[in-house]
Length: 121
Image (cartoon, rainbow, N blue to C red; front, side, top):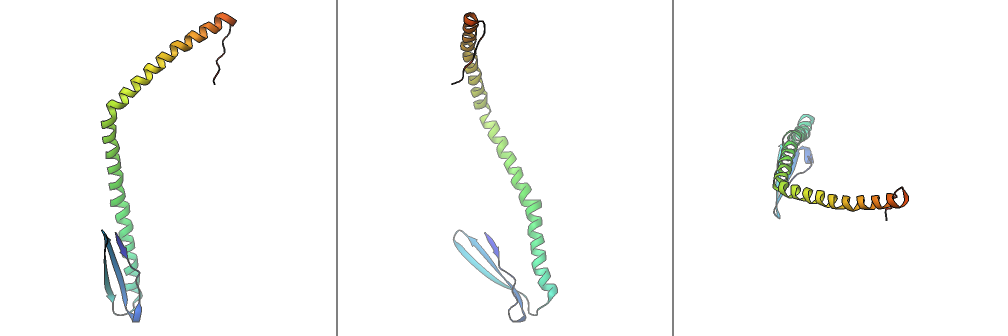
């Protein structure tokens, strides 16, 4: 994990404190950007890293995540293809078994009353 500290201007200098955290280890690196206080340096030291991060996230990291997700979904579909076909066949068999009973009930109701009623409990 990477954390960028805020840009500060202590004693007419511009510096930043970069912090890195990885597997419980913490590393802090202070960086002196300028020995004099300059609005141009201050603006560029905040704008350029922000734009770089946003661009990298939007055009590199996010597309990579989406591509990996699509690949993973495709892999899972291929792995489970036979299982899905088997379950679909079982469901169709169950439906055909239920259709026979329902047809018998409908026929019996029509024979008794001339009409049929289907109740759902």
